[in-house]
Image (cartoon, rainbow, N blue to C red; front, side, top):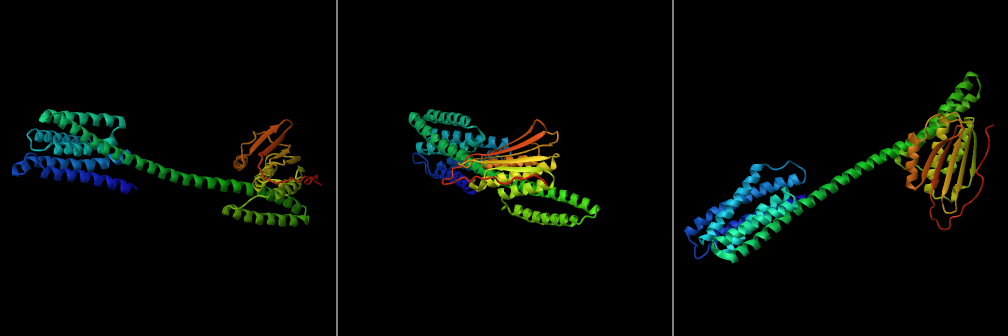
Length: 407
C-alpha cells in the first residue's frame, strides 16, 4: 500500500510536470508558433521542470516527516520550491500580457504550478493553514492574470483552474499521508497485540505453574519432613512416606508438562478430595459441606477447582491452622459460591500474594469475584462467587460431599 501510494504520487507529479512543459513548449497565442515564441516560452518550461523536480523531492521528505520517519525538510528546499513557483507564475503572467501565451495556456499553467506547490505544503502545514495559504495564492495569481490585460475572463479562468489544481493535489497528498499513517498505526497496533498476547501467555504460564507446583511442593515438603522424623525413630512408615513423595513428584512432572502445553484443566471433585487428604495428613481438621457441583458448567468447575487448590496451599503455607471448612453452594441457574475458612492465620494483610491475584484473573474469565478477608479470632475466609450461567435442562444434584476429622 505504501509503495502504491508513493508511486501514484510520483507519477502524478511527473505527469503534471511533463504535460505542462510540453504544453508550454508547443503552444503560443496569436500565431506565435515560430522560433521567437518558442524561445520566449522556453524559460517557463525550464522553470516548470525545476518546480516539478523540487516538488517531488520535497513531497518525499514531507511525507516521511508526516509519517514520523524523519525530521522536517530543510528550509532551502522549501524556499527553493516557493521561489521557483513564484518566478514561474510571474513569468507566465508576463507572457500572457505580451500575448505569447493564450488564455487557455495561462490558466492551465497556473493549475500545474499551484498543484505542484500545494502537494508538499499540504503535508507540512495544518489543514486550515493550508487552505488559507492556497486560497491566498490562487487569489493573488488570479488578480495578477486579470490585471495583465485579459480582464475578468482571464482572472476567472485562472481562479477556477488554480482552485482545481490546489484542491486536487492538496487533497491527494494529504489523503495519501493520512491513509499511510493509519495503516502504520494499525501495523503498530498489530505488533502491540502480538506483544500483549505473548505477555498474557507468560502470565498464564506463571500463574498455572504457581498453582500446580504450590500445593504439590508443600505436600512434598510436609511428607519429607514426616519421613525424616520417622526415619530418625527407625520407623518403617518412613519408606511409605518417601514412596508417596516420589509419586507426587512424578505427578507434578506430568502436570508441568500439561501446563506448558496449555491444555491443563483442574477437576473440582479431584481437588476437593485432594484438599481433604492433604489437610488431614497435615493434622488439620478439614470438613467439606455443600452441593454436588456436577450441574455447574465445566469452566466454572475448573475455576473453582483452582480456588480449592490455591486455598489449600495457603492453609499449608501461611499459618498454623487447626481447622478448615470448605463450603460449596451451587444454585439451579448455574451460580455457585465457594468458601474456605480456616483458623491459625499469620498476622499479615490478606490478598497480597501472587496466588490470589492469579485466582482473580481466572474468575474474571467467568465474570466471577474473589474476596479474601481476615476475620476476628485469627480466622481467614476465602470466598469465590461465580455468576449464573443459563444452561437449559441443567439440574442440580444435592448431596453431602464428604466430611471427616483427622484421626
